[in-house]
Image (tube, rainbow, N blue to C red; front, side):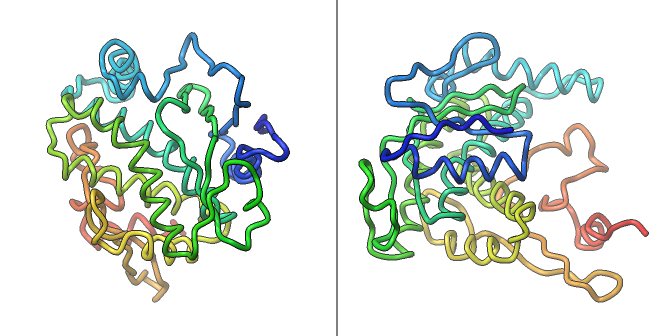
Length: 282
């Protein structure tokens, strides 16, 4: 069940239905829209995105969870940069959906600066305060307070990229010193989170192919600071079936724990292994 709060006649109501649909298809994550005067949650397990962006003790506590998970599940100590990579992924993947899901479902793009987002990872719970969103001229929400009308789909795609960069840029600054990666590599990770998050949710929605087409338009490979294209391509399965895959712009470093078990979209995974992983067992 989702507990997303609806606010008739406000910018928040423009995205509430999209977040409710997200929770329906992916119950492990829910996004709650806060009223303008509601306090963001705090306490055990909660962290503000602005705190992650600031580094320091809040980020230390956040990454301690990832470090403990690696020790518990794999029985070994991961390098600090590997732990930081895991932590960034586990935040950025859901955070990007705050922007991409409303865009994909309703052609609305909320602005979600780090000051307005909090995360409880154990519960898979995000809270967000939506003060402004972009939409198309024919959107019924165009008359709502906080709406900013843009002329066409291309302009709306630019809003998606700007909104994600506005949120993730400060977060990358917070994680960056722990990552042992340059800015290009960090934005390669951001590019992957945008693509793979929406691709996965769209699959659950039964709209995988549309999402792939939309993401290819969103990321043609020329938009800074993002790195590379959406990276989709097709493989052929053992029965001649089409198997969609993509090439990541970055590596999550999981191979440092399990060299023999790379992700299906990892640059280290050859096409033969991808086909094997993507083909259901008979």
